[in-house]
Image (cartoon, rainbow, N blue to C red; front, side, top):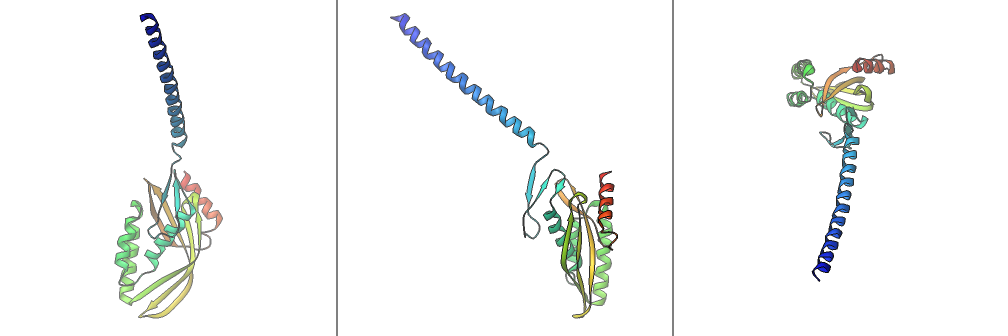
Length: 202
């Protein structure tokens, strides 16, 4: 009787061991699958961000930035620099410099200070109406075309077509403005964009 009971217990234990072995193999398979998934995702993470003023979503993947991201940032930076009056330009400068690349900080600060002095001296206001945004993802730049209206003492004194070039750097999970300047057709041509890409790639 004892031998039969022991054989039953032994059979039960073997069944438990067999079930545990199957569970262990299943866990190892899941772990291997998770490891392969993580390895495939290394360097390919995509972060969905929201711009300072949300109009549409965009993404950043590795060292690439979507055209939508560039458009949103360029439009917002243009607002800080070009939609200015004596009352808001100092505040705009403070916000802009938070997004300036370290090597561009001084030049952007100086440009905004000169613009502030001129606006306050003339009691002027400028407004830029964007008509076209053309992003270039490989060079992290955007060409902005539109019309710049200038008012002095609330009277419109100029309304001229303008083209600007905004260039960015993506570093440490942040987009930084490196250049914002008025540009001519030669600077924003496809050949010029290619040249900027070659310089950036060196």
